[in-house]
Length: 345
Ligand SMILES: *Cc1c(COP(=O)(O)O)cnc(C)c1O
Image (cartoon, rainbow, N blue to C red):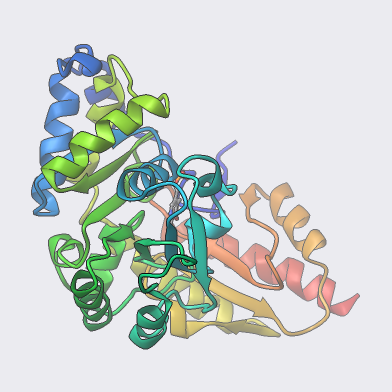
């Protein structure tokens, strides 16, 4: 059975061509620095973001947490929007791994004002923790991009205060396309960037941590400590190389499809689509009438469509490379059917 899966863009599976380059990848022991495919992927990643160096890591969470571990000292404070992935979806890892204190700033859109960030940076005082890092996320998990002038402003502020800035750029390529800028332009407003190969770009495994040479050398040691130094990793790095060469430009299709899906959903009864955060491949909406989300999820599942139940009353559908316009028409039709039935009951 062919599933239509719009739960996330992490569900994408490698296609024929990607699998072929993986099968024929030249490999070596990457812990000795001997894997040419990993080396190539790291060079390409640094080049694309115009940074000095890059490191291949097993996951986005790994890359973010390794970055925090590398930038900070135990007991440091990290300033971060409370809605970011690092806070909400990484199982409290920064407390366990880096041993830092998270100074969360409440804001749904991932962009607390420069003033709020400035006043959260600690001054020198015996009682205060040291502010060790500021984290931002672009594109943000709410479906929005952070405007260039905003991230520029925050980076200038951080640099002036000598606090490093880490960007969780899991979807930096989506952000760049939506923003109409190069990924390097976004990356220029940060000291380190993590981006994912395994989301919209379609690789099965892997993320990159990118930054200054010295920072990446230190992170390489941290990766070893965290158990993430891999041996013949070229097999999976090959998928990453393929993704960077071939899968970035097509993300525009996912964005267009998200807009198409959003338009279709907005025409259904009792549906409110949040068009103000439809920047990338994610559609957020809520049902304003009395509907059983369990009924909707199960009914669609029976029709071969996988969706996530709503979180705090909010639904999220994510377009990706394994989902076509025709698939979206099926989603709209089946969703309308289930919605109409549950609203009427
Ligand atoms: C998916 C995601 C991550 C983590 O990636 P994993 O590979 O799932 O660990 C980090 N940040 C953001 C914004 C993400 O969407």
